Image 1 (cartoon, rainbow, N blue to C red):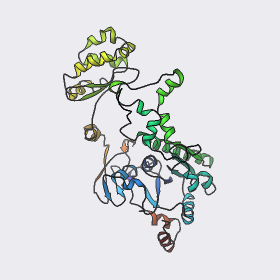
Image 2: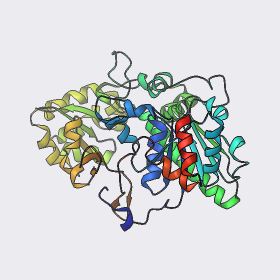
Image 3: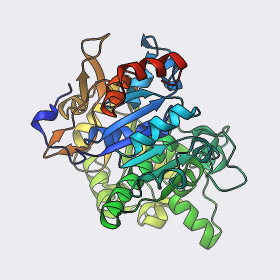
Image 4: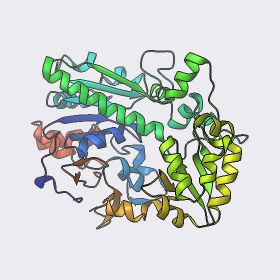
Length: 403
């Protein structure tokens, strides 16, 4: 178990049962949040192969298990089930009668076909909450389109505001649309659970990768919709409308400084020994600094390049918003991250101490518990027995490929 044993911590979603027809990133990321908060998340997977994330490399932990899969599936249970077979549907319906929510991240045309929407499940359990996280939505001309994170970044403008001016379009280095959508799936599920407990009725909740991505264009979208202002790229990953808020060169690397507010601008120039910059008419106001950003960048580069990054962090840390620019190794070995207990150790059948990122949510100051993602079908027999199926029936389901 991770740093906090479940028996020693009351988890807020304890007693909630969620069935999830999920694969790969967005859906599993969202339900893992719910699982670590105490929900019993039963991951429904195709017999034989399971979630495609199980076989996503390059780092494997055994048959149908990988570090990629572990990343998105801590604290869950695994049930293999053929939802397209009559027997599989019967098992699903029996499960739904015991559940609070059913989530999925299937293609938009699939929930109705698989019978996992409210139209199919509401008659079995009126309070069931059905949450759908598709690529483009379930009720439009793209419902049958497959779609992934990078495609959404491309179509909704992310690539046009990421990277350096004059360079090819650039995506985020991480699949942020998947993670945003997963969080929205978790939020919709929680909202649905609250409403169903009040009204006794569930319903369908929908989020799509496309909608989530477009929504995250945020204030540049508002600027365009109301003023026709098209936000583009700014050099040094700078903020589009205030400066200095960007990368600066140091003697041995890069430093990100965000002296966006007047008080931080004053603290910055005083702390680095450059009060003359505050007196320079080119930099005297927020508007003047933006108009003369290139000149200000050159001035600050000239100062920051005289010493290594650690020197500037020791001066500016806690005084002005500032951060080093780390690679993945440096980020994970950062003493602050270690002190914050953001690296967890999770026992796994193949590795005694599988190192994973801890959940970012704390309860009473403590990290949430973590256990390894389940092996394919690990909980199938136990769940079927709990539903009242006999050993002979379970053997038959296995022989027929139903589970």
